[in-house]
Length: 86
Image (tube, rainbow, N blue to C red):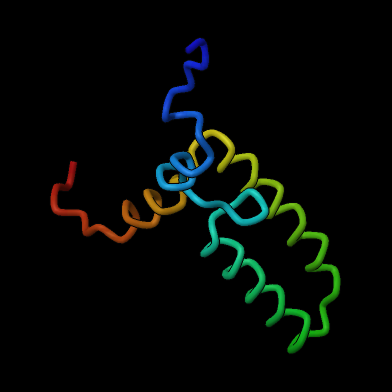
């Protein structure tokens, strides 16, 4: 009777409630970063973009570590029209 485990710590319950990250960042950020890198490498033969891609990925991991939904919120914020000119 001393096995008091709350539902919050079970892996199945955490998988339903936590935000899913791929390589530490949201999936859409990984796809966008990879697509832009692919375009630069294939069309401009600019291989130095790979170093920049790693730096951008590390920055995204750092930002997503505290708030996993930062990029979703920022995207929605920037897509809103400016109704009030204050």
